[in-house]
Amino acid sequence: MGEPTSTTFPQEIIDQWAGLGIDLPTLFSAGHLGERMGLKILQASPEKVVGTLPVEGNTQPYGLLHGGASAVLAETLGSVGAMLHGGPGRIAVGVDLNCTHHRGLRSGTITGTATPVHLGRTTATYEIAVTDERGRRVCSARLTCLLRDAPEGAQ
Figure 1 (cartoon, one colour):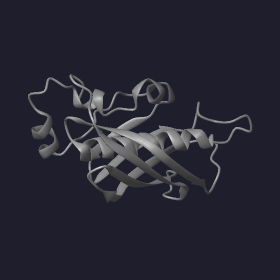
Figure 2 (cartoon, rainbow, N blue to C red):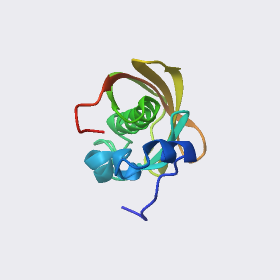
Figure 3 (cartoon, one colour):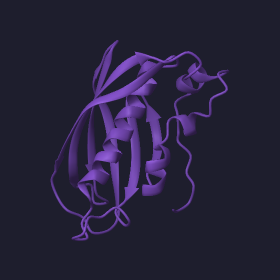
Figure 4 (spheres, rainbow, N blue to C red):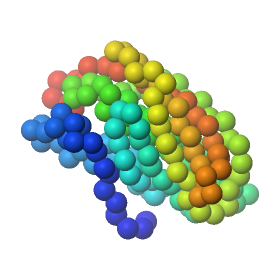
């Protein structure tokens, strides 16, 4: 699915998670679903998460980008931001996702940029702008995650 990429984390995130024996790019990744879809996370911090997704292979029967693919990109990026905001010892669980689809695409790559609307003690809400290669808005999404204490032994 293309060339492997590595997620860029700010030094303060690397320092915060250092010594826990955790592979950050794997923990803060798109997981198996995102891997099958070709989703790549390029940059990740609590203040901004950026990722891409190819249109090819993620279309509905009419040949247009599937709205669910935009939703997967949005939820992944917002969840990564929320997990980084929560820090080690907390997990983020999505509780509300809203997506408005503005235009159809048949090819290319979409880019999602998640920025926080609210970063609290128990919830984090992100706005995710999904754009095409020309910078045109394809989807506007909002994700709210509940921040919970991680189960014993899990990070």
